[in-house]
Length: 474
Ligand code: NOJ
Image (cartoon, rainbow, N blue to C red; front, top):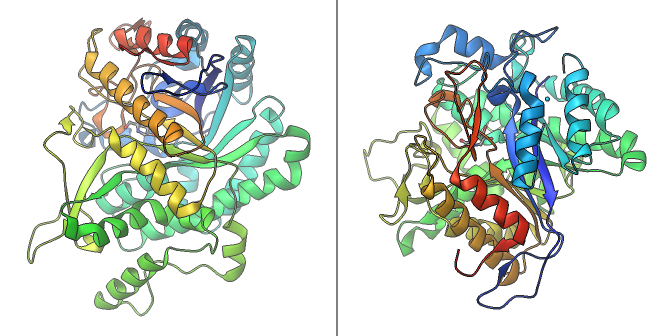
């Protein structure tokens, strides 16, 4: 089964806003996230089938920085009780089926500790058998996904009230198909990217409608889709137009159909894609059109906006003949756009994350301006390093981002209800293998017991949760 988990704990205190008051509103929830392939291991346990990341890492280890895979990962398949204990120590908590037993144990274990499970149905681990039938490029996947959602809702909907259908379509469609360097390892920038984009939106919508029709009355939960949004900022004041186009290309292509009043693709992107497709000699746009029934089906399929935010980019039009690179997260050839970073955005060991905390607030403001007032859950935010228990860089990252979230709540009136740290513990970071560490807990991957040790950031985050905010001096 292809799941990820975010576990939430309610923080109870709250006072009103003044300049020195960095407290969150009462009822604000803090959590930590993780994902099945990245932590569970048990890759061939019981009756589990092969996923696209199993196949990719086993056949193309050269595409993973340290040649590793998620066969054992953090062994959370066996060590889930330890994970729950660690979540409890943080003040929050956590999570995964040889068939349904494993997930039932996990969900029940979390609830026992007062930790709410937030479940993502799909976090990039498509069964290889479906990939062999075309995976996300096959339109039938929308119905397959809804069938799968029905199974999960039926089994766990009595206890799981927060659902995410699909995690980061941008990262599972654009980056793999534009580069061929991530699972499923297929290079198809013209077709794969946009077919995947279209079918993800349809799959999400069908799973959402199904919840409405068959589960909402008895289960009373909330469903959304998690989008990874980079904040694109104009490089110079003349570049505002291309910056907005970049936001529509990355965020709008996965949001407009769901959250806008008119639905469908963002019109600015439709126009660019028509022109590009014509220039490439295609008789139809590479951005496959929606029928009017499909537009209606997708529109409004959300109970909240789920935002994953990590970093920002500057953007400007590319100069004549300038080289554009797309991988890992780089320039945008379809828009002839060059991206860069500000000197004050400190680099991390990940080639894609530069520390740009103000971007999260700007992103939240853009979402409200573009799609109106809605509940927003920050479903991922975090920074990598190379390891070690003293992780002041991560503490600074969390503090500065949380401050910006608070400003968005208190100054911009944005209804942010949840904040989720990525991630509970070090895990398999896709093409970076185990070399990039994002964890509040360090994991010893050479120890067969996969020992978890809290970093300084774990104590820091636990305090934030306990105080429902930042202390004036922290
Ligand atoms: C977002 C993805 O959902 C997660 O799988 C990944 O590990 C983090 N970003 C960090 O890159």
